[in-house]
Every structure is written in C-alpha cells, then in structure tokens.
Length: 211
Image 1 (cartoon, rainbow, N blue to C red):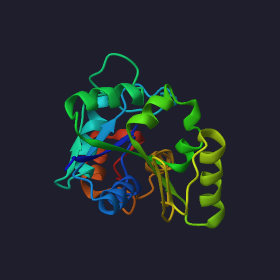
Image 2: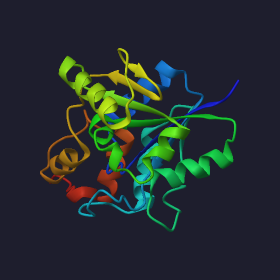
Image 3: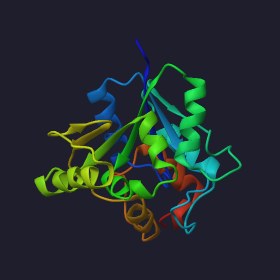
C-alpha cells in the first residue's frame, strides 16, 4: 500500500494554532502517514516586511508541529532558487517514488491556483486538499472555481483530485498576530507556548518585555 504524504508549505511567520488545526484536520481525515511542514525560503507571492530569518521560522515550526507523523523540512529553505511548489513536488517524487501526495492549502490560495507556476503539473501529481469556511456560499465558491478553471465537478466535497474540508475560520492571521505582538497584546491563545517563548526570548516581531 502506498504511503500517503501531506505537504503543507507556508511562510509560518509565525506558525499559529490555526496552522496546526488545519494540518490535523486533513491528517486525521485522510489517514496520512506523514505530513511534511515546509517553510518557504523566498515566497514569490509575499513581501519581505517583518519576515524573520529562515532558520528562526524553521525552529518555530519544529516547536509547533510536534506530532510523530509531522516532519519539518528544510528543503525549500536550503534551495538556492525561489520556492515554487512544483519544484518541491518534483523533489519529493524522487525521494518517495511510490507515495501519494496531498497538498494542503487554504481557500484563498486555491482561488488563485490557476496562476501558480506550472499548476497543471502540480495537479497531475497530487491531490489538492482545500480548507473552506463552513458556510454554504464559501463551499459553492470553491466548487464553482474548480469547474470554471479546471472543468472539475466536485460532488459534495470531493472531485477529481480535489478535496474540500469545511472548518471554522481561525481567529487571526500571522500578520495580525505579528501586529498584536508589536502592540503588546497577549497572543498565548493563538500560538503554542513554546513558539511564544521563542518569540519572547529573541524579541521577534517587536516584542518588548513589560517592565
């Protein structure tokens, strides 16, 4: 039986409990054998403002994703070129030639997926696992996009190479968490204790000790 491997990439600046919940949702639902957590090195679609160095984001991911089936990978951090998903997938297929791959993404990323570099090759070599908001309109939007862009009909929540999983939206994005830290707001409900301690110790995102 083929190994089922999830792929979850992102800037993780910082990783938060929403990331953890998203990965767990798909890992449990699809009974994944392994989930690779892959911090970006040079995110093509994001600005560099407030982006902490690669090694720190890798360290925070290692602190956040501690389940035995999770593996934090340096493959994009150590790559010299930009971190296109298709390059990562090619490399993984060489490492695990018999595995089935599941690319975990949020709904916003999915709705621009046709703009991704070599998106057709990505779709041919993995299943897209898309997190959706729970309301019917959000699910309908994803289904409509899949049919319009890829001619894939999603019956209920699954189609040819695409799986949709409705879940409650997380309270804050990474950028909002950074802003809260800078403004002295306690973010302990939003990120793991170990990640928060790491941020405090190094004064990341403008964190300042209270006098």
